Length: 201
Image (cartoon, rainbow, N blue to C red; front, side):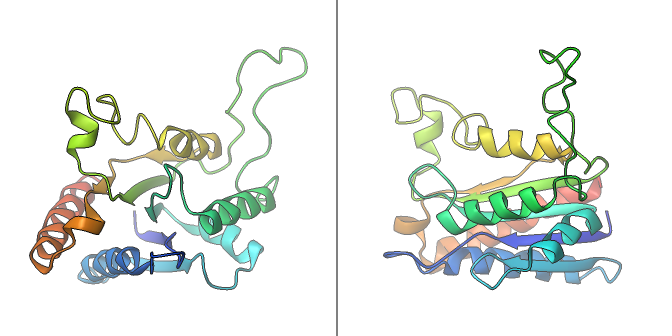
């Protein structure tokens, strides 16, 4: 895993300035830059996008790292548009060839037509919701994790392309809990997560 493509899915909207996800991207680059063997490419979804260049980044990468806030239990609208446009550009062009089925037996093999096999991806998300909203009985997410709940479709999307998921990281209580002291803790915990992940890659 030497070629790393980092996507910043944060954007400015309403009271959100997108700053935290830029900070997380900076932490990621800081960590990776300590090892000179890593090649890094980045995209910020708010910038002007060349669709073919973005497809080529996915094809180039060994590992794709997504950083995104969660708005109204989904990824931001510009990030969704980025995925829709780039993955469509990647049809028969490096990302996927088909949905994997054949007309002979269309009931099986759905989701097996991806072209990004051998690549991995990691997802980070940032939430206003506290971690306990996902874990405590009677709380909002009914004891369903981020990955098995709100982000289930995001993971299936990546599986459709052939990429393999590695353990991600979720930042909780970012709005109400983003004190200077907690930002230090966020960085420390995330950096430790990266250390563990990259030991196995």
